[in-house]
Length: 310
Image 1 (tube, rainbow, N blue to C red):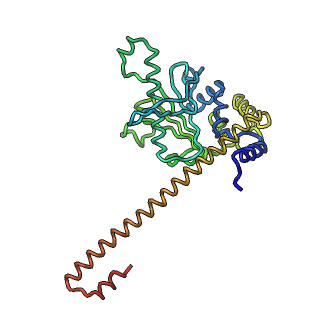
Image 2 (spheres, rainbow, N blue to C red):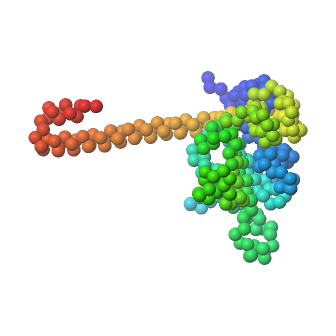
Image 3 (cartoon, rainbow, N blue to C red):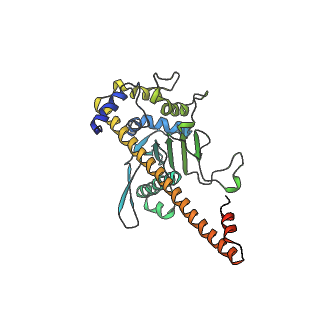
């Protein structure tokens, strides 16, 4: 008999309770970490390599949802995992991705474009009208940060930074960024290995990479990162939060499994149709060749023997 959803949630709750820490790559846990502004500021400064006066000192959480209109005028909502604005007017989207998706680079660019468009609207609403008239195309700085729990095809290292460069600078050791107001940080957890230089950035990445199976907190880590480990101890969590995480794990894993199955089935069907199409085309070509050779006096017996050659 197939298990009910409630039974699977209960089993998942029991499974979670066997672990020391929650898995931070699941949505409720990820958002619990960065709902705390102190954690978000510390993470952003570490991952964006901000130092001195350029460091982020305060952030404001923004509404995660943005609205789009499709070609027939219907509204569709897009949703950022973590949507925030810094005190100095920079806008940030932090995304946690557990599974590979089709058109992943397109999705990164779509979310970054949504972030930019919403940031522009918000910025123009805040600045004086005279300034808007003088600088109608002025754009705010936006950061798109993607933490990926799968192998990202275009990543060579566990941390990749994407930006807009001159084509002539590609291959040079220190190319200049043409448009520094738009930055992408991609973190591929599957490529991460613990680093000798225990930077705050490496501590954060190791947290996402190691915490799902960790039995203890790493030594020598920053006090903010240490507090996150303590915050995510399973035995300190409420029953309702454990149930929320268990439900999300089941729903998300089932969704990713369905997407994977559909993609694989689609590829298989495509390959099958492709082979059938090629076979039909080849048969048509063989028929034309046979007709031509017959018109030149080649016997049917000899034709059949020739066409049978693989």
